[in-house]
Image (cartoon, rainbow over the protein chains, first blue to last red):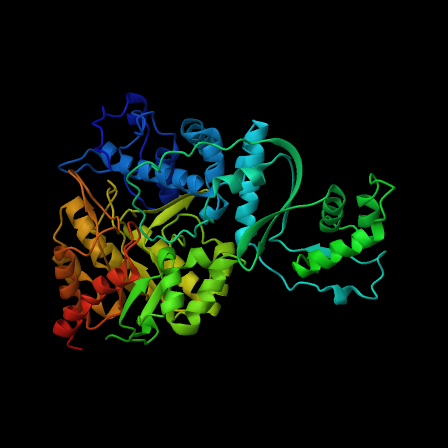
Length: 304
Length: 280
């Protein structure tokens, strides 16, 4: 950890706030925890410090550190840990944006989207929608899809034989939760493949100490991200993550099945814009054979 | 003493924290190791490699669950979604006991993902003990609470940390995961005698012990788990074993992780104390 900076005393406005000197009720405890959480979760300064205006009158100083400095350790740990998590989950976005822009984006995102889950796995779930730049958003969408594909459930897959004799006009098929469909406007799959990034890590630490901001090896030079409309599936097979590009028609069929259309309606929807010159029935049989072999189909989830 | 109600009447020996860099070595070489401790939250997922690795480990080894987000000290109620997922994992691992920290970490649904220190007051002790009882009743497994390392103390404190720990575990009738490194770290940051803390611990409630390394800076000692166990922590460990008997011991090494063999060798140093001081 870099040495903690000496701070001025809290400003008068915060010193004048009433404090509960005794914790008698659960409401008192909640108020104390709200005050401390507000101190930790407010954005750090440009120097990675806690704002000087932070209320710290509930923390005892010791012979080496002020109450401010002691609380600042936790504030820094909070921000560095959450930033580190986004660094882990969005390595391609970091390369695409570059270190400075990525870091700023993460700080702004966390300020508006603090963690509301007991698991850090969900921390970056709203990042794609938070990004306004369309290229960067596509990169983030694909990386979030990788997170989902990595550890979403794999239900019992349906085989092609399971579908024999079924009535397409009433048959509903589910898609595995670990199969994610994405329509994107940039070749993010090629971009990520070019980066040759390793698979996602499982967080495995019980230590809560985060003494330094995330520092990684220098950001690699970003490969070119080409504009291209891509119908992409991010999926898991034998616990490895894969990208698979689909034709617009097969992608539309899977999307419709996922969204609850019957098999007959999904095929009709998929082919509504398709070329009439193509002999579609053998194509459709090939899709089902391939997707079934990949284990993508499952029972359609019943509404609870 | 080694086997007691708080560790499911088991006598597991010396274990290691299961960490990603060691997965391949463990799965391929199947090294001899008494047991592994897993971070529960890493495996509270619906599928994928984490659960496949866990199932493979469970075929070979005894696994004990250690959590980081139950937050017994939160003013908010226990998170039911979290508890349900945790119970599924308990059934999967058949963990003889389950541990989490004596701390708080979230309020109003906003989560710090940190192990934040508690204010040491009687009302907070009562509140915390009640939540530990609720969790144990739901999970149907013995619970040990771990003392955390801390860098700050509240002006509202009415008692010492060890007095607070005693109040909580007696009221909850639960076990203690005694982290001797955390005692040492906090003693350096708050200026108390770590052996005084140790002497005050109700040793019949100690179900497990943690050992680890830390990092000393100019003004503060940080609980980093990225070094071998330093001598002052071994001294505390020896004293803890002398008082508690041969207790299940776990080495935590979470950053700058060396090879499995190096981590295991460091953990096995605990044997000299177990053999010298275990008198139960």
